[in-house]
Image 1 (cartoon, rainbow, N blue to C red):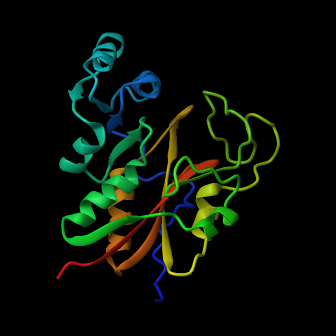
Image 2: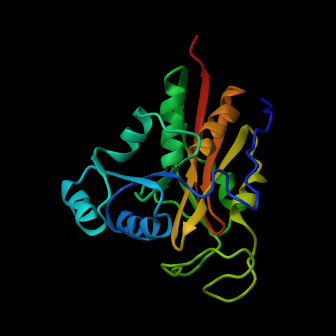
Length: 236
């Protein structure tokens, strides 16, 4: 089966809907606390909401940063609540949030199944790694990146050498028979803190809904990415 390749434009030099005015931070653990601290300082005018299922973690956020919180499972909250096109989403949990959100939205009107990322993709990405058989991770780094990396355009902050490329661009060029690919770009909002506006998710959903079939769904910054796969068909 042939697919029209519906790929979002991830190569823009400026993020859409910037600076952020509304921010969801998904998770209040270590990375959620880092995001809360850095984003509340940098975007003092923004409305920030932190979502987590741990009351202990949320209490720390309230005490340390005086931010509003919601006690809920973060992905479920995102899936079941409306967000605006210009609302930024900061995944601070070990979950492929964009993929889970897309699966949830598609299931409401179509027959959808999670699939394993084909093994052929491993050979097309830098330093492939799998924690399970379905999800594939990719990275240009072979080292632990600095906690406060600001993801500069041309030079790696760790090695001081020119970048090998932008992974979000490179992933759009991955070709595997029977699959189209959609890439959600993660933008740096603060050193070590990345995310994307709601328009990136709705844009990805629009691209996928154009044609039934199998899709690779990637979320990627300049250096690191995660890839999952799904297939959908009309339920009627």
